[in-house]
Structures are given as C-alpha cells and as structure tokens.
Length: 349
Image (cartoon, rainbow, N blue to C red; front, side, top):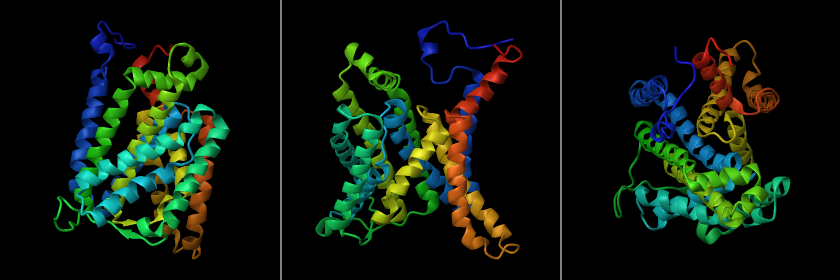
C-alpha cells in the first residue's frame, strides 16, 4: 500500500501533479470546465465568469500579499486602471480586445510598480496605509480627470475584434471561453513563477526580508517586481471586467472591492494559487446562495428582500472571523488535510 509520495528523479519531484489520483482529479476538473458551458444557463454562466475574473484578480493579489508578504489595500484601484485603459483604447482608438487587455495589464503593472516604491521602507500596517493611499489617489484622478476618463460618468466599452471593425456583442457563453482561458493561463504562469529563482526570492522576502538581503537578494528589485507582476494580473482582470460588462464606472472599484479581494485570499488561503481559486468560488457563490435563500423566504418573511443585503454583510464578516480563528490558512489547507488523511491512511503520521 502506497503511504506518502516518494520521488526517485528530479523530474518527478518538479512535476505539477505527482500521483495518478492528482492527475485524474485534474482531468475531471478540465472535463467539467469544458462541458459546463453547454449545459448551464446564463445565470450560472454569469456566476462562472464572475468566479473566473475574481480568481485572476485574487491570484494577482496573492502573489503580492500571500507569497511576498506585502499587504495591499489598493486592489480596487489597480482593477480600475486596467479597466479604464482597456475602455479608453477601445473607445478612442478602436483597438481590438486582443490589444486592449494586455495593454491594460501593462499599464497597471507600471502603476503598481510606482506605488510599490514605498515598500522598500514600509512594512505591515504602514505599507497597508500606503496602498490605501494609492487606492484613494487613483480613484480621485479617475473621477476628476474629466478630459480623459470622463470623470464620474460611465464609459461604454467597445468590443472590437480588429481595428476598424464593428462593435461585437459577446454572450455569456462566448465570454466564458475568454475568461476561463485567461484564468488557466494566469494560473499556470503563477504556479511556474514559484518554481523559479524569482518566485523563491518572493517567498524568502516574505519569510524574513533581512535574511533574504543577507543571502544576496535585492529587496528593492524583487519587491518592485512583485508589485508589477501582481498588478499585471490584476490589470488583466480589470480589462476583462471592462469588456465583459461593457460599462466602466469608478463605483465598481471602491475600497470595498479591495477588502473583498483581501477576504478572498484570506478565506481561500494565503500563499496558495489554488487557494485563490477556492476563495473566489466561495466568495462569489456565498452571496448568490444567500440571495436565493432570501427569495425563497420572501413569502414567509415579507421584509426579507430588505434584510438580505445586511444579512450578506453580516455573514461576510462572520465567515472571515471564523476562518481567521479556526483555519487561518484557509480552504486550501482544509483541502490539503483531507487529501493527506486519505493518502496516508491508516498511518496518520
């Protein structure tokens, strides 16, 4: 009976999936993702697309906060940069999606690197306040730069497939393949980043930045790289929101959004790529489930429609507290414990 994982070559040790069960599980997930859009209606496709976008943004934030230890409260603003750059390029230049999305990501990476400069001197709460300032500064610029961003007015994004083409309407089904395709690419890129020298440097900085510097790691360079890499993926999520929703307004990118993404990686698991995905699924499905329960109870409790938003906020806060108290490492750790139990059974040690 196999009890544990044993590697005899470096190739096996570096593999993303080590056991036949893990490979089978991955195959089932891929099969589910391929079949799901053909059997789901628009409601479930919308939820799936929301999960995909949130997962991309959460992975970006986890690179910075979970893997590098740099707390950020500016996620909403960085999403706004990607969304506005993509929207403005499509509106004024007629740029196609395959150009606006990477352009929004690159612009967000540059802005993120600039606001990451204080990380060389600041840590912990002080860095969180600095990123909170970035959130406020970026939103202020967006709402007051009327000549470029339109100020507080919403922008109607155009979905062009090529320069000079017609505005194309994408259904939820079509956007599913775009969003999920990019989510898979972002996931694979992130997993492989932490198999390289750069990823190991990020983790070393998180664990003990002074020791990392003594070992020869350039703190300024790698902290800037962490901010830029994180913001790049967040910019992809922001650009996707712009093209998917086709309406961009600053109200979609407030501080509440930053707190939401921080909750996603806390509940999913800090320092875990899969945890970002689990957290995205949990935090998107929870309000949907509560909303459906509220609708079901509306006939019994007449004021339930009014109470549901407050119930959602209460449950949102309660869930965060419960995870911090009982499982600080999130859903990813819970899933790992379950897998380890069955793999090592009956020898618990």
